[in-house]
Length: 142
Image (cartoon, rainbow, N blue to C red; front, side):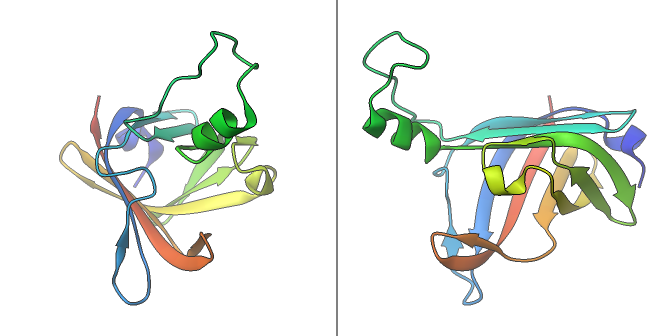
């Protein structure tokens, strides 16, 4: 599959992780929001958030309490950078990520297109709250 086929804006419909026992984990709740934008010339940006994120008490972009910052962090996933296709995988050379450990790494996601539905899945487990889990996001064209 080529980037040109999946290029565009995609809206998040579901985001789920499964453990080896088959138990589902919804890290951003049952109705997450977000998007993935893929450019034809090879750039991917992903931002996912929980639907019910509480606002900060003060209207100060950087002035939230530690608790407010922790709650915001626990309900947010993002990364992006140049990308390329390798077989059925999109490989992102991560330039920016909310999770600092991914910055400078490559993130590989299996992708499949079925009409206007795009599925991105991890190609290996990711450690989520101390448990290795396999992730999958389902998106629709925006």
